[in-house]
Image (cartoon, rainbow, N blue to C red):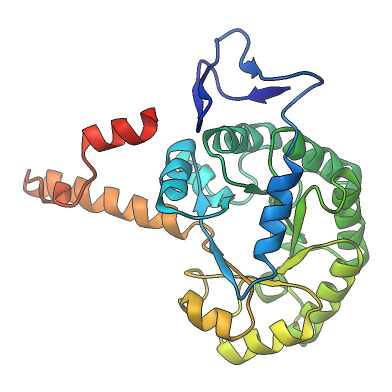
Length: 304
């Protein structure tokens, strides 16, 4: 099995040392029979989190941020297409193609020991077969879950089209091996009529098609979130820090099972960087370092 990564990169696995990647090979063999296969135990662990009172899953954008979040103590980590895109200097929204995005996902998976679920946007392709290939590659790289959106470039797919794409994803990653999180953008780019009714209809159909969880971004009021959690026949994922700033305990009390952050952590880091840059430019002072992790501490954390 292989772990794909970038040109000349060194990846880390907790407890197994470093995986040094040559510029020629661009991968490290760690077994046989293809690319890294996911751990069924990790998929089960990720799925089990959805059965509790609720959990927060943070979104990493590179191997370093993933390692820090794992060390903080999170039991699972998601990737963020927004954070990955911004780290490459481009906007979110499929500005990176499938190969580029999955290269970043592979680095994150290889850097941590906890389950990783990948933000796969709308599946990177026009057809269900394209979506199936994307999910299959994510599985091969070691991801044990993934988000799949029902909209692309501002267009909400028809419900039958969205179900076809979701079914292809499920076929590529059977239930029990991959936690499929079906995202519906009805509150972003949905119908001009009853967004709630459309969301519930889609959620019911998506669960019937094999989704393990339903992700509804863009909801802003608590009562709507409560109604959605009650009406959707599966765990509800809501993103905090995007359209709303409701805290996780409140969301759990409303029935939400999974709280993700999207690009919020990446935005916070980039905001800190901007403030530091402005301080340096305006006054030349180093106040931004007051609470910074020390060089020695980061060397210790990333060297372990």
